[in-house]
Amino acid sequence: MPPPKTMIHPETGAPLRRCKRREVVAYMDLTRVVEVTGWFPEDDGDGVLLGADAAPLDAALAEMKAEYAASVQRLAKQMRKAAGLTQKDASLLLTGSPNSFYKYEHGEAQPSRPTLLLMKLLAREPKLIEAIRAA
Image (cartoon, rainbow, N blue to C red):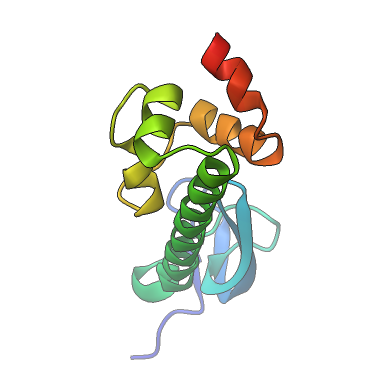
């Protein structure tokens, strides 16, 4: 039996057709536009993805998570070296935890948003580490 050509949206009652649509996937400061096949209304309303329909979205999200983690690893190391800090010194000074920069640089943990912003600032202005030490 051939698959149906239309279905009804389970929440809105809108008629849906099987077609392709570009969807935006976002993770942290990264975005991707992904083409997915699913059940969509004629307007820009929400559609329904069944089974493997979501696979392209899942793949894009996994790719962005890996890209983001790698960028944090690079940033942690770059900032720490620019400021002339060891992993332990950077950890204690910026997070209070003795092993956090080891974990950031090895992809075992992600910094909090405030710590990430501080790392970005210190990567651009490493001399600010003296003001942090003096505080």
